[in-house]
Image (cartoon, rainbow, N blue to C red; front, top):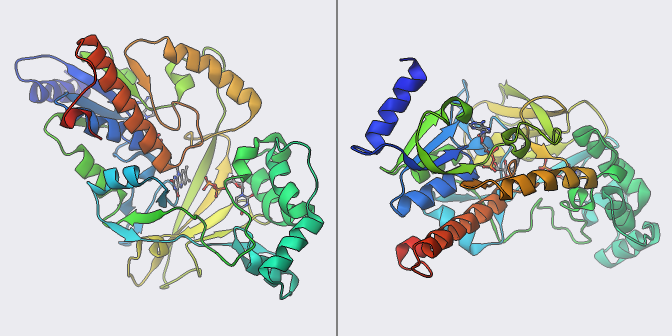
Amino acid sequence: MDKISQDLQNAVTAAVPGRAGFDYLVVGAGFAGSVLAERLASTGKRILVLDKRPHIGGNAYDRYDDHGVLVHPYGPHIFHTNSEDIFDYLSRFTAWRPYQHRVLASVDGQLLPMPINLDTINKLYGLHLTAFEVEKFFESVAEKKQEIRTSEDVVVSKVGRELYNKFFRGYTRKQWDLDPSELDASVTARVPIRTNRDDRYFADKFQAIPLHGYTRMFERMLDHPNIKIMTGTDYREIVDLVPWTHMIYTGPVDAFFGCKHGKLPYRSLRFEHVNVPQEQFQPVGTVNYPNDYGYTRISEFKHITGQKHASTSIVYEYPCAEGDPYYPVPQPQNAGLYRLYEAEAEATPNVSFVGRLATYKYYNMDQVVGQALATFKRLQQQEAERAGAGAPSGPAGAM
Ligand code: FAD
Ligand code: UDP
């Protein structure tokens, strides 16, 4: 018996003494898979969680690097949400460190607040405008648009072409290898334009980092006697070997169907991690480089985690076409292609598709948690209907 089969045998035996199989096979141990595993296990279901990576946490995984600095191997992850329910749910598994992310953009030889705000404009042009005056300034340079359709429209209709060129065009072209005029409005609309001095990257009600890191939070979520975890395992290696009733799939949706309708584009990144023998590298968590270099941004983890350390660790993000899929690419033709896969997904019994890759949505962590919790409720509902017992009640029905 090879190693995988032996591990499997052990997992199955340990999970279900006297009975073969799992109620749920969860593919992917990121937010989507881990939330569902936790919720379903709490109702008594037996769960096998698989991830092809050698760790849990998906893209939010964090770890101490060789220098003892806590880093996010897949790029900086800052939790933010307006949903009290989602924040409360995650708070069952972690305490938090309040953290407001700040970003500077390197433009015309200066580091300027991003999102664009009153100080960005005053520093860029050496002015002393008030909030009222900057609003008038934006109005004077904004281009009138009949319809806001693309990522270019969003920005030029608010702040005109010069600011668009300085802060958005180059960054977007690097990040997506597309001109903003070829991308849905939703992409640059993620970044607001402000007339006040608020220099926080996010404006959400809850903004915080798990106090002991994301991985610790995931460990606590998955720490349940009904949950078995196998990392370093592609689900295709074992899907036919272990009995299961329902699958939660959180990988890329096109891969699940063998790319039968064609490959869905996902944008990738190459992360270059560097440790620098000085206490601080840059003034804020992230500095964006819209116009220079091959990378889009540099993030310094100690700002985000609050860790004290004599050295500091930073990450450069180089966008690329090949590599792990990180971003769905929001364009009308891709939405059209996704709909073909979505129809396949809906017609696939006993598999739920959840998360950023499986539903091809440019979701933040909180949105994925929300989607997973909604999926859990739906599964509960379906089970109750099957049992002819009406709506679920008691702790099993609660979030
Ligand atoms: P993932 O975390 O991608 O998990 C899916 C898992 O499925 C992966 O671990 C993968 O290995 C596994 N898998 C795939 N195929 C298979 C297979 N065949 N067999 C077994 N396992 C498989 N969000 C925020 O809210 N704030 C941020 O600051 C933020 N920063 C980000 C920065 C970067 C650079 C990136 C790329 C994303 C960022 N996000 C941020 C988004 C966040 O990472 C996602 O919303 C979230 O991690 C998605 O969770 P998920 O479970 O859907 O997917
Ligand atoms: N963006 C930009 N300039 C910036 C920051 C963002 O043009 O300085 C655009 C770019 O297209 C980017 C999008 O806004 O992909 C969303 O930015 P966000 O910081 O939300 O990206 P993420 O953190 O998801 O990579």
